[in-house]
Amino acid sequence: MEFFRKTLDPMVALAAIAILEIFLFLVIGAWTVGGGETMMTGLIAKAFLGDELERLPFWTLVFPVHGDYWKIYISLGMLFGAVVGAVASKEFYLRIPRRLSEWVLITLGGLLMGIGIRLAFVCNVSTFFGLTPEMNLGGYIAISGIVAGAWVGSLIYKRILEG
Image (cartoon, rainbow, N blue to C red; front, side, top):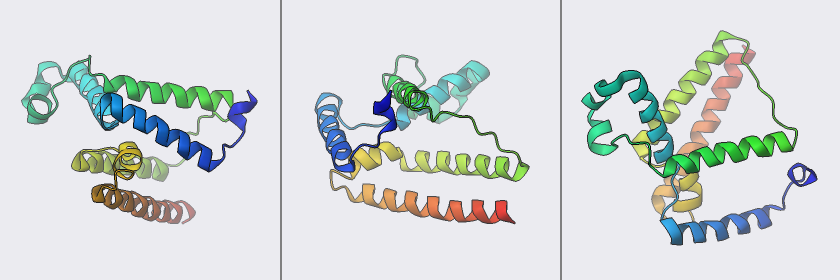
């Protein structure tokens, strides 16, 4: 599969993404992924907690849990496509952290990202491909926060692992 091993011209890739975004917006509206992942989290929590989950207002008032939420399938499709692309390009491998400090940093980073996405009530994918092309100031503020957070996080990660 030589197609997956070649790097696309960035202008061609951006044009393809822009055209797909236009069609997606016309068909379903704004593209969001965080809702599907939130619903999957709710379904997993409901499997473990049962009716106790309904004691939390978020899962009853804001985001009631149900398995037919269509955005779940966008998230699963992206995961499937990423795995197929990585396997087809022979770039798929599992990397397991070897030190406890790495596990702590990965866990803290994941928790902070989860908190950030719930506070913003949007996901980074829809921010880059939805809000920013619409010239939405919130999109640019979110991207600035994502870039700053990634930069600071990488500095911390590098300092702790080298130290």
